Length: 551
Image (cartoon, rainbow, N blue to C red; front, side):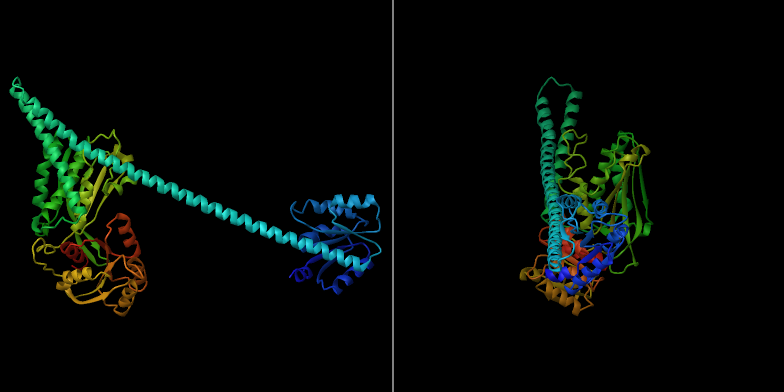
């Protein structure tokens, strides 16, 4: 391998005598070297070096115009310090002074004139072998440097990821600790007020006005304690899947009017401008929904707006908007959009998603200005999603001086009949004639799902693995709905969903997850699922979710 590489080496011969050049060229060609250039003019060496890039230079020392010493001086400035460039000097001057001067100038070896051709051939071979080995060493060093850089970057990336993970864990622990401290504070504070003023009321020396004032404080403390306990119970029931929907015919205008009256005195007491705007025709102002939960959602949002707004205004209302369903892009569906707008403290962008999550608040510090357990928005988000809608906030705390504050929005699908039978023992739905694929490896869960969906299915297919799910969907392009378990053998539900989405963009896929964590939910949506439902699955919740896409 070395010999073949040597034969391809670029060799430059510089000698002012044509006869010497002819001898050397003949020798080299006879030995198999093919890439040879020559020059009798030493002034051309620099240009030839740049264009030819020689691996070896045979250089005469005594030449007109530029001597070999001067040529080597020019080349020295052009060759990188770590690069090995062999120069074989051709000279009739074999004195020690000449040799020393040549070596100092950059020569690697000597050939005395007249030439001994065998010696010349051996010296050329030795120098080219050394050149080749130096080049291989440089390549190895370069490869090693690149690998070291690559590994260093990997280690730096891993280190950053570990730091981020550590910071997240510490932040999560900090938030949970703050939340528990907050809950403790929200229970102990009103409880202390109740016990403290009850003991004071035992004093017979109290005047009637003092007794009335202290009784009022006890009432307020009891109301605050009751609200905190109710929030804890509600979020616990939501997290464990015990919360049920109870449908009733609900007049939106009447419900909003009652809420307006309920909070009017609180808003006026703080000097806030308080308005209601229901932009709905009378004939669509009534819907079938869980009015208690809708009332709770709006109460939480209005109560927060009043709490966090020191001056300015609060407005809440509702209007009809058109949304687009995932099955028919461009086909509009009517939804009711509720909003609560305030001119309060605002919420920074990095908090606008997290405030809806459990254990999260915009301010968890010990010096926070506002009371409350911080569970309200988590409850509101859970109820909105149970009713088939979504909730979000728009806020810019930098523009509070302009009165922008925050606006909370949530939507509910509009359908007068959609929840009419919810909360009863009957599961009656307008949805019917669906072809459904159940992807579930657990027989008990499969049996439950089969019974839960039989009223609105025309055909039910089954798959026990992700592989079978992909195959079943490919063989049945008319499937309307896939209930996709996430954790399965062979291929999990997320990978199965990704593969199905490569050839079927329209089918509705609802993920079933036993975890219910935000991260798992995000992974399901990112994989291509339209929605998700947490196990244990409630029949009523599943019905609402399916109606969301097929009514």
